[in-house]
Image (cartoon, rainbow, N blue to C red):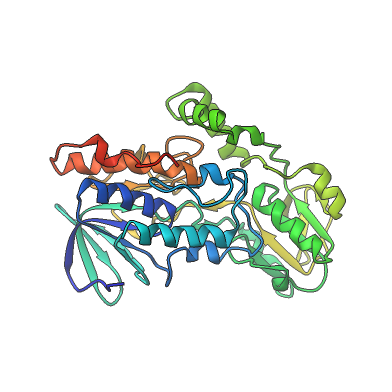
Length: 368
């Protein structure tokens, strides 16, 4: 991969080489726009390879493809972490997308008529920038985590990789959504006593991922419909429902469901019923928050969420986002949902350049 040279100028820079960045790159290339994708990792797909080893997508392969390429697996199979990483690498190679690895954007500065991207040893300038750094940016960890006994090992959904990371003794997993549930079951299978803390996020219906319900969901569960806005608000407040994991699975594995973790006492986690959890490891799986502090001027609201309309920045002309949670629909942050948002954003990019949008150029070759 080519390294960026000092003061090189590009029409469009995409920051992030995961599924959102690659989908954006696909549509940009089809539109004939000069661009580069900057990926902070050494290898395409490493953002997936660094997650826990037993991770599987809760969406089936039939909706895990990207524009122009279906996921190479039986339609009902749930891809593994490594399978998804390899798919992204194959995807970038198949469409010859200009991905630059080991390119860490330290700062993005908006000037009057262009953007400057500081990459440490060099810099780039661009007319437009698409931020595709994904929805799993900074794990949510409460301030009271600092009060835990240093002897307790603390991990997050981003830093946990396998049961070998766990300290001897019991494990407290905080966050009972998909990630927390999977991690809790894996820790229990390794012989640890496991407590899963947090409110029950509910059980999602796997039938939603059937071909027809998925299509209907893409149309109805958006920010443009009352139903979609209600679901977006509910999921944002209470977390995404579990898919494929039943309450009986916890019982069979010996995972104890406990209340919320609300603080500490004598260096130990305190639950909402006053119980002190005597554990060797705490794993924070309470979700993630967006991190755009490296962008100047400020492009977020008071809670740190990007200000945008369907991925088009409401604050800064020429700045775009792809892959944000609920960017337009409940599927926006899923692998199978990024293509529509990327297509919409790229159309806007092309229009801003004063060019005519050829809708055929930004339409997927193969429905994925």
